[in-house]
Length: 439
Ligand SMILES: *Cc1c(COP(=O)(O)O)cnc(C)c1O
Ligand SMILES: [Zn+2]
View 1 (cartoon, rainbow, N blue to C red):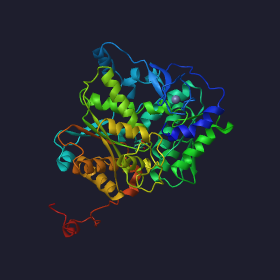
View 2 (tube, rainbow, N blue to C red):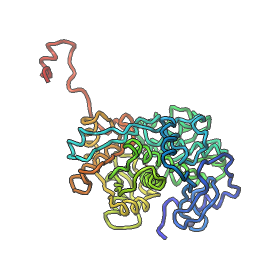
View 3 (cartoon, protein in one colour):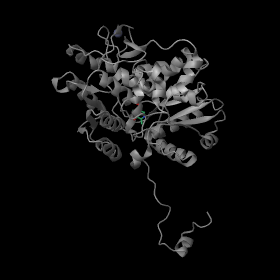
View 4 (spheres, protein in one colour):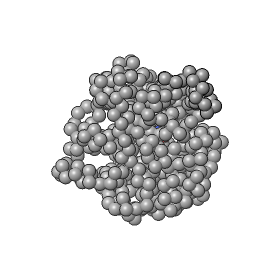
C-alpha cells in the first residue's frame, strides 16, 4: 500500500480513543465511513483512519435514487447557499434552520476579457469563492464540520490552519455558540491573523511550519487536553472534506446542469480537488448531468509543489517538501490527499502544474485587470497555472474551462505592490501637470 500522510499521522490518535461518541443526530443520506484504501466500513463517528489498514476514511452515502428531475427541482427550490444540496451532504434535513454561516452559491463569473487575453474560445469561467462569509472557500468545509461537531457533542472547535481555515473556524464557532481554539504558523499574513482573531476565540501561533502545526494537533487529539475537541481537518476531516463537493455541484448547476470540460483547482492538502471529483461523479450517477469526460488540473506554487513534482516524475507517492512561497494558503509540504490528486489528474487526463511567485503575482494582476476580481495568492496560482497549461497546449482553449479563485486578495495585500498612479495637491493645474488628463 502507498503511504498516506494523514493515515500515518492518525494511527495513535484512533487507537487511544476508546469511547468513540456515536452520532446523536441525523447525518442525512450518509450511512457510514468507508476506508478509501480497503473499503472497510465503520459507523459514522469522529474517526478518520481505518483501524485495519490506516487508510483515510470518507463519508459513504445512500443517495436519493429515482427521478433526477424531481431532485433537480428540489435543489433549485432550496436556499441560495450550500444547504440547497443538503440531500447530498452528511447533514440533517433541517440544517438550513440551524445557526450556521450558510456559505456557498458564490458567483460563477463568465470571464470573457480574461478568455480573450488567454486565447480561450470555448468559454472561460471563474468560480469566485472570495464571496463566502469569511472570504475563502474554507467556509464550505467548516459548515459541514460544525454540524458533525454538534452531532458528536463536541464543545470546542479547533484546527490547524494555513490562515483561511482559522478565520472560517473562528467565525463558524462564534455563530454556532461553540468555543474555538485555532492553531496557526506564527508567520502568517497580518490580514489572516486579524481575520482569525477578531471572532473572539483562542488563536495560538506555533513556532514552526504548517506541517509542524498539524503534527502538534494530532498529538493534542490523542491527549486528555484535547478531550471534547472537534478538529475540523483531523478528527472531523471526513465530514469537512464533503463541503468541497458543493463547489462541483454549484459549478454544474450554474453552467445549466452541465459538467465543465476542464477545471483548474488549487492544491494544498489536496482535499478540495479530490472532493470536487467526487461531487462531479455523484451528479453523473444521480442523472443530474449528462455523463461526458472532464479533466481536472491541480495547481500549486513552485515553492511548495510536492504533488506537481510527483506528477511530473511519474511517481505514485508524494515526497514532502519544506514550503517557501507567497502562496501561504497552499503551503502544505506534506499533503494528506496528494496520492489521490495524482490518481485523479491521471485518470481524467488532467495534470498537476506549478508556477513561481512572480507568475502568481502577475496572474493576480491579470485577473484584477481583466475581470475586476482581486484574488488572494491561491487565485494567482490557479490563474497562473491555467495560463501556463494553455501556453503548453495541455489545456484545450476550445473547451469550457472553470478556474477556481478560492480566496480574497484583501487577505494577502503584501503580495501585490500596488499604489496610486500619482499623488497631487487638489488643483486642476497639478492634475494637468501630472499628465493624466485625457487618458
Ligand atoms: C485551504 C485552501 C485551499 C485548498 O486546500 P486543500 O487542503 O487542498 O483542500 C485552496 N485555496 C485556499 C485559498 C485555501 O485556503
Ligand atoms: Zn482500510
